[in-house]
Image (cartoon, rainbow, N blue to C red; front, side, top):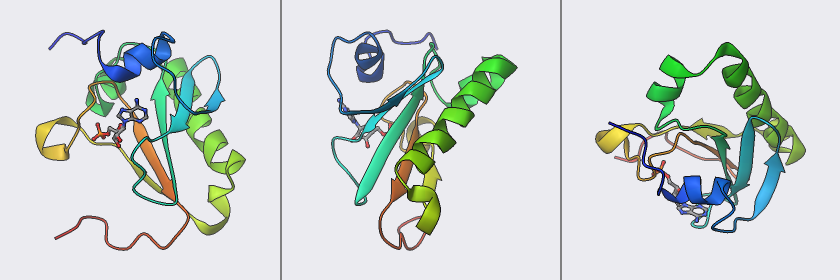
Length: 119
Ligand code: AMP
């Protein structure tokens, strides 16, 4: 499926929609989720047209992958999430619960997060 340039995260990357920015570098942008599922809930997205983790892992260069995941840990340490722990989630596709078709990881922290998947 071709990448949808009109998805909300593409618009955020182009500056057409504002976000509450946490971190940015040449590879990634991180911002607070508008509907937080934990006391701290941040999304990290790569700069590039990647639909999902599956797409990113298959097509991104080694430099882009390294740069992206380096940014994820930078965000976690910048927000102090690395001290007490955090959860890293990426939803892929319909049954994975992906809503926005631009690869992103959720960083969740700030309380004990309980079971991985609700029954
Ligand atoms: P997913 O279900 O993995 O695709 O997650 C998409 C996430 O994006 C959800 O947690 C939404 O709350 C979040 N979201 C959607 N639009 C925005 C936005 N404009 N700014 C910040 N977060 C958003």
